[in-house]
Length: 97
Image (cartoon, rainbow, N blue to C red; front, side, top):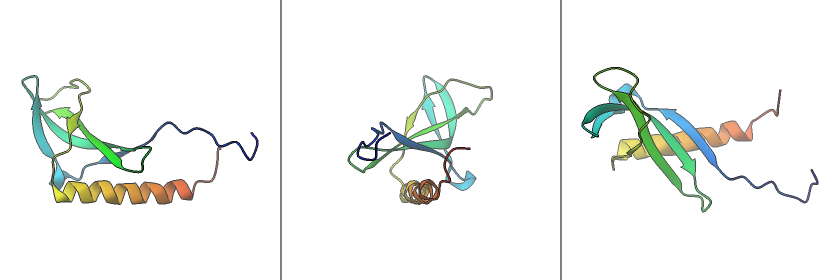
């Protein structure tokens, strides 16, 4: 690949485990879920977007359903810290293999 051709990156996303003390529950289609994971995406304009995922509190695998991130300062701080950590990890990558 030529040095003057920039590859088109269509998405940057990270998965973040929600610490137990920050987890919450939400209901979808009559089923309660405990939210344990965030998927954070870097949008083309530099802003972040996040969705939450989890497991049904009644047990079982359940379906892969996304939930909005509640407007809580401690969750916003988790997303911010995770984005900074991911940035440092990407910057320090050592290439393939």
